[in-house]
Image (cartoon, rainbow, N blue to C red; front, side, top):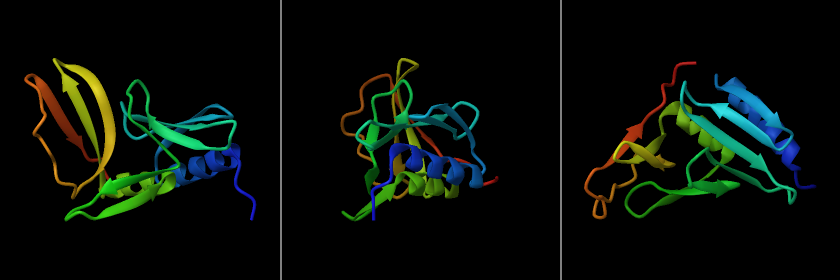
Length: 136
């Protein structure tokens, strides 16, 4: 079976996001924005190599095609882009935001059961855990 092109992957993600009740906006044939809530936008980008990357605009965290997340007790689980949307909606996955002196430094996805390591937190650093509503 032939590998899907970035356009086919983004088309499929756009349909999945809409079915989950997320607003979507196609910024170009290579870029899809999924509005997770009023202020959170997840960006999906297709490359010329038909690879899909996704993350949050304005922050460094991103992943390629799938994300491997720690669950608990040393176990890990892999999530595709559509799995990420589904599990964000259900609350299985959460969004972590890192602030320093009220400035957003990073934003990433985590499993709700992932152990949190606060060993390296800096003074005036704040971590916010956001769980999306499952209402559509």
